[in-house]
Image (cartoon, one colour):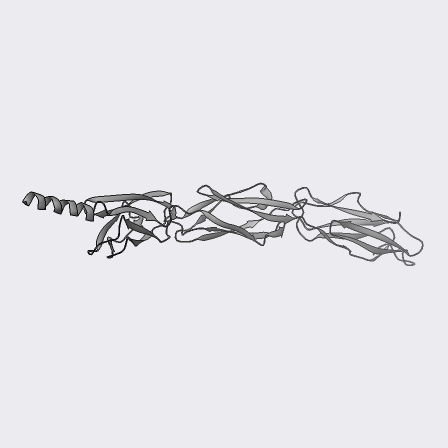
Length: 309
């Protein structure tokens, strides 16, 4: 009789513990480090008159769990909280649940940060101007920060090769100084981290011709004036060619005029020929952006005066 009673006690214990612990489920896996989540311990049947205490453990300090949770009477499961720390590399953590002598386990993958957003402000600039790039990640950077790789399909974007987002931060910014371009250039820039890549475009526009001025609007024939050509931004490395035309053989200008690389202005000499009476000629200058036409009066020297402005 004692043997039969002992057997019944052991069997009852197996039913209460070993058979009732069914599985551990996780709300999220993979889970970005630094993000909280939940899990659930499930029984194969509802807890009986006695609540079932489940002991929990984690294989790494990266994941923190409560020491235990209790499945209330009449309930088939109980949730538990999961707290994670930021990690520099994807980490697999084993979560265990124990009831009596029976232990079940499951793996939680804690992820390192990934790029979630990438943008420029402003998204379009003239070559030679600045813009600011901002990279966002999906969770806080771990100790030591994370380095985001930056690449582009053109050197004209003028940015760095990487960005370090400091520990605890979820975003980082960097400044770019674009280079002057000949034509409209869409710089495709990619931010990459832990296998995730996000690309965005930075639109770079070329300098445009802006103004043409002459230092003297009236000169004595045989003397010269100085013309100035101005762009609204720096010229590209190839230079910026400006077309200058005249409507009279009484004046002469250089055949080719180009604003040098990186410069916004250039001056040139306008030579004139002597005249017997005042004559107005016209000089035009232009390029992409504008076309300007100016009059220049050429006058004879005053009686008894030498040539000059």
